[in-house]
Structures are given as C-alpha cells and as structure tokens.
Length: 287
Image 1 (tube, rainbow, N blue to C red):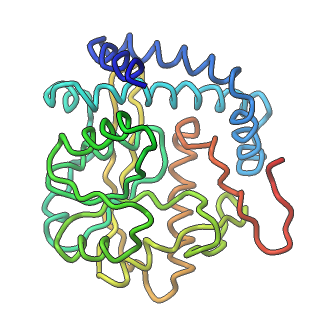
Image 2 (cartoon, rainbow, N blue to C red; image 1 turned 180 degrees about the vertical axis):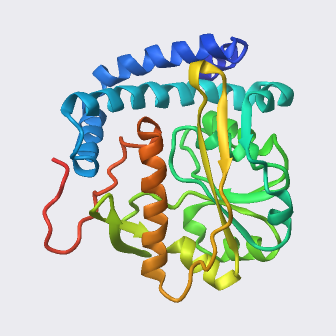
C-alpha cells in the first residue's frame, strides 16, 4: 500500500491532461479486467435505461470505468496539489452559497458521481461535517483523513455512531456533506422508485431536514471536457422540503438524481448494486 501511495504522490506532479489520459487508459483495462463490476453496471443500465441500445450501454459503461479510474488517480491532486492549483481546476457554478451555509442548518446533498470528492473541496469555504468510513489499512486510512482535513476543520463521523452526532453538528452550524443514495439495506430506508425500479432508499436526509429545519442544497460534481478540470454546480436550496410526507420527500430526492444522471450518464456509480435489497417477495436482480 505504501508503494501505491508513493506512486499516487508522483502522479500528482503530472499536468491534468496527461494524468487524466492515464486514468482513462487504466479504466479501459479495468473494464475488461473486472467482469463482475462490469456485469453489475450493465444490469443497472438495462434496468434504468431500457430505451438504450446495447451499444449505447457499452459506451456508457466503458466511459464510466474510465471516469472512475480517473477519479482515483486524480484524487492525488486533492491530496497533494497546492490549493491554488486544485482550485484553479474547479469551475464553480454559479458560486458557493456561503451566506446560505452560514445562515442556519444546511445539508449539502451530493449524489454518488465519480467526482464527488471535488464537490467536497469546492464546499470547503467553512468547517463542515461528513460521514467517514475507516479503512483497514492504517496508511491508507491516514491518507484519507489527511485528504479530508487539509482543507480546513472537518468533523468526521462513522456510520456506526448513528444520527446523534450529525444532529449535534447541524445544530452547531456545521453544514453536513451527505451522500444518501446507496443501498444500505432496509434499515432506515423505504422503497421508492429509482428510474422506475423500487429501490431501498435511505430516508435520513428528509428526517434530518425535518428534525433540524435544515435547508438542502444539492451539489453535482462532474468532469469538464478535454481534461480541463471539474465543474461543481450548487443548485438552489429545495423549497418546502421535506414537507409532511417522508416517503414523498425521499422519492423527490431520487427524482432529482435521475435528472442529473441523464445529464451525465457515464459519471454515476453504476458499479454499485443499487437494487440489491428487494421488496418482500421480489426476486433478486443480480446473479
């Protein structure tokens, strides 16, 4: 692992167009070398976008592997590049809503696109809080923590700590950077459509917003074309959210993600088993 970390450190010195092309080449190899993940991605796309031809799905899956590989190698920039360099590569649209983030409890809602870590960098105009998954390898765990902490104060929680420290952070005025769009099973989740497929979806964002009065500001981070950097879009805070219906609020979240995925289909996390948890009585969708 220390060798891989050293290799990543060396890569961060490369110009982004070269580093990005290396990442794309590695991603092409990953497409062929990891058939299990490739199959999951194809299954997800067949379920979510049945209107596409198989050739169109193959193009999206290939570009997804390339983008995912790029995100791993280009994370070296987030970890070691100068602040001037990394911020110079990020185009923020329209602007970071710092005044809103400071005006009361705020949830920064960032779906699982491959550039999500870049969104986290753009949002670091003030201290914030987020979930952190400890790694078994200490050297890699230390690196991940360093990468999150080098941009300023951050309060990190593990999923096992539950909701109380998150509520405390929101009430302390720390924006909470949240990624609630993965399948974590039936606990604290409800089944709502995602591209027309019933998906176990965490209700945590709606419940947190309801309990604290937090505004929800979505963030979508994507690649700029031609290896020029990244685009981070801050959407307007949602109005009338969550309302009185937690299930409807959770469906609203999925509908927002669907719209953004259709805009950037290759950059969503298709290799995740989004439909692994099935409603009672329904057959599994992954072999």
